[in-house]
Amino acid sequence: MAKESSNGLSKPPPMPSPLRNSKFFQVIVADNFFTGSKDNLRKWIGHPRFELIRHDVTEPLLVEVDQIYHLACPASPIFYKYNPVKTIKTNVIGTLNMLGLAKRVGARILLTSTSEVYGDPLEHPQKEEYWGNVNPIGVRSCYDEGKRVAETLMFDYHRQHGIEIRIARIFNTYGPRMNIDDGRVVSNFIAQALRGESLTVQAPGTQTRSFCYVSDMVDGLIRLMGGDNTGPINLGNPGEFTMMELAETVKELIDPKVPVKIVENTPDDPRQRKPDITKAKELLGWEPKITLRQGLPLMEEDFRQRLGVPKKA
Ligand SMILES: O=c1ccn([C@@H]2O[C@H](COP(=O)(O)OP(=O)(O)O[C@H]3OC[C@@H](O)[C@H](O)[C@H]3O)[C@@H](O)[C@H]2O)c(=O)[nH]1
Image (cartoon, rainbow, N blue to C red; front, side, top):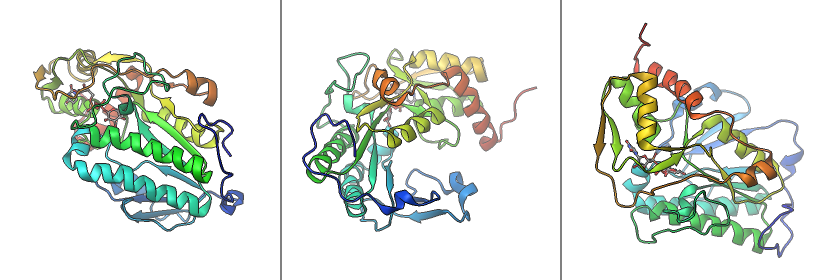
C-alpha cells in the first residue's frame, strides 16, 4: 500500500493480486494503434511471455494483471487535437476502465499524466504543488483537462476504494522509434533536417521546453511503479531550450545548411515549461542521465535508417 498519500486514505486496498508472487514477468500490451506501431514491438512478438492485444481503452478490458501502466492517449498536439472528443473519452472513460480493472484484480496502477496539467504556467519551474493555469475551453483542453480529470479519478479511486496509484507528470519526451510524423518538435526538426527541408520554428521561437530522452523516462516510470509514493511526480529533463536554440542545435548536428523558417503558431501554445524534479530525485533517486546533445544523435541515427538517408562521409 502507498505510504504517502497527500490526501489521506480512507479504505484499505483490495487484496493484492496473487500474480505478485509469480516467478516470471509476463507482459500484455493493449494498443489501438492510433499513434502506436506494431513495428516497434516486432522483437517481442512470438515471445512466450509477451502478448499483444488490439484494444481501445475506452472499452473495458478483462485480463489478470498485477501492475497496470496506463499510458493510453495520443501525446502529440496534432494527434490529440485531431479528434478531441476521442481524446477526452480516452482520458476519462479509458482511465475509468483501467481503474475498474485495477480494482477488480487488486493491481497497482500508474497513470502517465503530463506537464500540460500546468497549462501556460505562471510559475517557473513547475513544482508538483502548482495547480496550473489551464483554459478549460481551449483547443488543448481535451488533453490537459482530460489528464487533470484522469488524475482526479486516480485519487478518488485511491481514497474511496484503496487502489494503489502512481502518477507521473511527463514533460516533452523524445527518442528512437518515435513516429517520424509524430508532429512534436524534436521529431519534426530531425526529420526536416535529414530531408534537407526548412526547420519549422513556430512563432515566436522564444518559447521554451525541456526535453527528456526516452530511456531516462522509462527508468523513472519503473522506479515510480516500484516505489512507495503515489505522486504526482514530475518526470522530465530540467535542461530548458528555446525552440530557436533547439533548431540551431539540430542544424549543427545534422546539416548547418538547412534554413530555419518561422511559421504560424496556435494561440494556446504555452510559453515556457521546465520541471522542478526535486521530488523525483528525493523520492525515486531519479534524474535524467542523457543530455539533449547526447540524445539527439541517437535519434538521428534511427531516423536516418528509417528514412534511408545515409550519413555523409
Ligand atoms: O514543427 C514544430 C512543432 C512544434 N514547435 C513548437 O515546439 C514546442 C513544443 O511543441 P510539441 O508539439 O513538441 O509539444 P508540447 O511541448 O507543446 O506538448 C507536449 O509536451 C508535454 C507532453 O506531455 C505532451 O504529450 C505534449 O503535448 C511548441 O512551442 C511548438 O510551438 C515548433 O516550433 N515547430
